Amino acid sequence: MKNVLYWTDENFHAFKESIERLLPLIRFFNISSVDFYHKVKPFARILPGTLYEDLLHHYLVPGSHQKSVDAQPLRSNIDSKLLQSHNIKQLDHWIQGKDENIPFENQLRNDFQLLLRGSRDGFTPADFHRLCDDKGATISVIKVKGTGQIIGGYNPQSWHSMNKWLEGKGSFIFSLGDGKAGNAILSKFFAGYGPYGGSNQGPYFGNGDICLYGNNFKSSPGHCQKTQAYDHVIMPGSENQRIIGGYNPQSWHSMNKWLEGKGSFIFSLGDGKAGNAILSKFFAGYGPYGGSNQGPYFGNGDICLYGNNFKSSPGHCQKTQAYDHVIMPGSENQRVAFFVEEYEVFQIMKR
Image 1 (cartoon, helix red, strand yellow):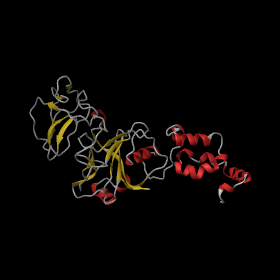
Image 2 (cartoon, one colour; image 1 turned 180 degrees about the horizontal axis):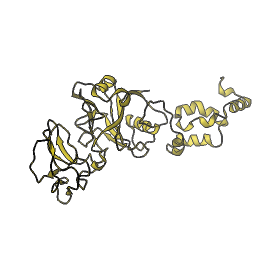
Image 3 (cartoon, one colour; image 1 turned 30 degrees about the vertical axis):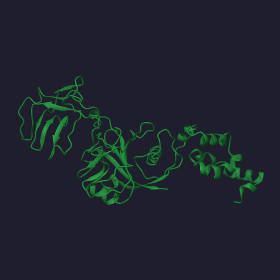
Image 4 (spheres, one colour; image 1 turned 90 degrees about the vertical axis):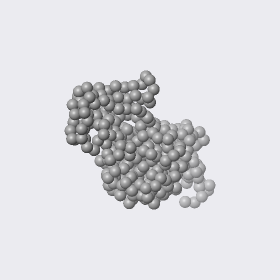
């Protein structure tokens, strides 16, 4: 094609006729400002209606035509079952360290290369490290079973399995809610523990802020809690540092049998200050449980301590049918401890 500066009216007319049917398929509002200047502006005279003026306004006043951007979302060849195009733009925006008040760019600055999908490659720590170690920056995306919430974390360094903490600077964890636009939460690294590369762990951020671990991430519950490492709560209930407990009117035993629930109760004293206590009385179903591998255990998980060491093994608090009130916000939705429906890990490479 010869230099457009030397085109005649006949040239422009012929060109317009040849591409007229294709113009509605072009996502003009997702074109970068550089490409707009060099590849669209020279052909302004053949653009229909006020499109050229609208595009100028769009580039000069960011956010002025957001509805047009949303109406034709960015096409993506990123292989993901969990992320939509607006989610990818959101993550790309965060990876760049952009302020939340700055509108998303129309083109991605990073490539998202799928390294692992749990349903395809497996849910074990060995699968994670086999496919994701030594790959540089990665972003892990997790869909929580039962709630559909999408959470995850960005690690700007390579994962490893040397059972050592990685530098936290530049990392973040996030929630994309149910994946729809407008309910995302960013939680940037603040201080303390960052990502952890452990042989028995998968994506692991902070001292439990988000962690997948155990023999199989599909059957072992993950955890999400608010520590001092990242600056925002991303899963309701995980922010609570609460005093909780339970009353068992009968003697405990280790015979791996349920005890009568009548008269028992569980409770929260909140942060220990007066005025925010919650009582949850036994209602029906499972009461306390006397198990050889358990400590205090009420209901089918309403409050339970179990495992080899209660200090290092996660306890659970969730709302079942046994006790009549929620004592830890979030546990009514099984969001404090969660099970993985699917997860994906992407290698992040600058374009």
